[in-house]
Amino acid sequence: MHRIVTVHPVPGPGAEDVVVGHSGADEGAVFTGTADGSIFRVSHGGDRVDRIARTQGRPLGLELDPDGRLLVCDAHRGLLRIDTGTGDVEVVAGEVGGRPMRFCNNAAIAADGTVWFSDSSTKFGIGEWKADFVQNTRTGRLLRLDTDGTVTVVLDGLAFANGVALSRAEDFVAVAETGARTVVRHWLSGPKTGTRDLLCDDLPGYPDNIARGSDGLIWVTIASPRDPLVERLQAGPMVLRRLSTRLPERLQPAPKRTVRVQAYDDEGRLIHDVDADPKSQQTPYHMVTGVREHEGRVWLGSLHEAAIAVVDL
Image (tube, rainbow, N blue to C red; front, side):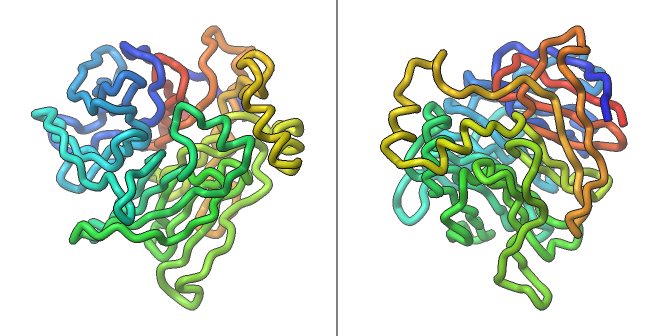
């Protein structure tokens, strides 16, 4: 259903993800990271924006540790931890098997401190995300960082691995496949342990970040509606896919303008479909890539916008 979007500007483009503070001075504040490497804290009402750190990279997915430290997936530097009080930045994991990650993207933190995170591509970095998407390299990975610092590849061959979320019971971890329009479940316990299936598929567009909300649901961004031309290219000969990504930018397929997120329960049932038509809004906000439901409000981030946004449920 259609909802009204309220926009809160931040001092820089590309506020890609959002997370809501849950303790101390950060309670209710919203964190986001922008294209210049800045991490901002936005007050609950959006009337105050403070830069709290710089990653010296490109921050994407954000999570908060139980102790309030910010876990940042930096597309250039890997997994980082930031003290939201001092701004100190620590590199937690920058390599996998001795090789730097190309495209660290999104994460979820388990109760025992295990971090599940995605590396979208082993061939292309964020500056060439369209090339990976159209060429359909399927080199995306779901990774696990254990509390002893060990990094393990759990799933590979994913079509642009993106958002990551854990189920309410932490019996599975979900990872969005942007290029396939699916959300994959990897089972961690129970009779399906070690196997994979789909939480949802044939999504109405391309999922980006996903996150478990305070309502226990897994919220999924729909960054852009399904594009039949892109999917024809993905299924075509590799030479054609490569040629299409070498065309001038204005001739390449581009994301369509939309503001849409969905929420699924752990059985894969669609519970919410929040669709805010940007044509009916006074704001041109679009391309939602980050989502966080918190106490009945749905906070949004965008890979392109110099703002975060919020929708009241």
